[in-house]
Length: 477
Image: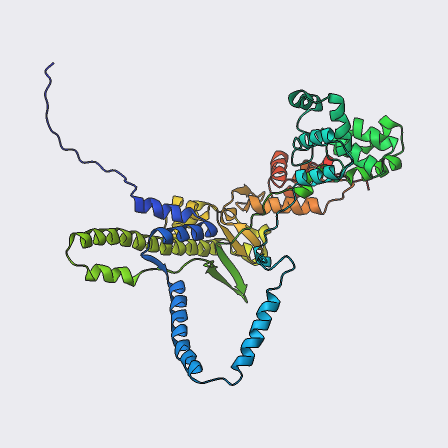
């Protein structure tokens, strides 16, 4: 077979994701807070981008300072007969305010500059250990034990293992652990839930033989609220068991929870829908968003630049930054406009929800909104991800309004899965606590309300709502 070289022309189509298009897609996915942070960084990197409001504030300050200059000159020219007394008074006030009991050279800290650090569980226990009447060796062992507690206050390692690793007598380790278990919060330093509950009961002087046996041997029946089985096993009356269980259930299963250092995450809505009279008003959240525009100063540099080599480099740099600035401004406007259209479409499709609440949420898919606003489904998906909307009925994710449907037992009617979940939540909230509704009972009630739903589906929705099974919701007191 002969080999040969030849040239051929082929015509093909290919989708190329430019940097600008990738940036526009990225902006569309960002939440409000993420967008504010990104624009602040972009303004630092691109000097052509400026905040119109900030520029106006700077100009106002400059104009104000110019107006104050002639007034200051006039004040200097006209002598003040009380100037000397005024200066003496101001000097006295300055000296009085600058007085510090810590010495003249030490500057006082402003109240706003003081950073408050939340006390951790380890710090709190270490502080108690340092105040305890223990030897240096015991204090050293205590620090080792305290640093092997998890956030809930439980030991994450055995004392014997720590004694071997850190070379201290195992007996001394258990003695120090007994001291730590008497610290506040009650129940800290235990290896498991049962031990923690027993420590709490003893420290609070609430322990009795029945309580201790329930905690040691019948914790599973207690979780299931199976009080009859506990009473039968211990040979006690139900009243005695109820009283003991009431005390146990009042104890803290996670002693270190109060010292949790997890930061609170605040949610900022990206769009608001307010009801004014019979109308709904849509407004985008623009708090903190800079009003970007291109700097006139750099535009003038482009217009006035000569043909020298340095000016050519400058023009190329400014042209590149100018294109980037114009594109990001265009992308921001496109993003805001798309979010507004999606919110407008949701208001149209979910009018019953905005009028009456979660129970009236209708089934909705991305394609419905995409066709309504003339965008692709992927665009709607990016808009609704990681964003929140404030409504008259509370704060919701935008994706919350897109739900599957469940068939009704009558005709072709369908109901939203979210409205079914809300109905399940209401039914369980109103149930008789002594005889809670089983998943099958909930399914029967919903079928009577023309909602065709199986027991296993009720169980799945209940778990999604983080609601315990009926046997664990039972209350005898």
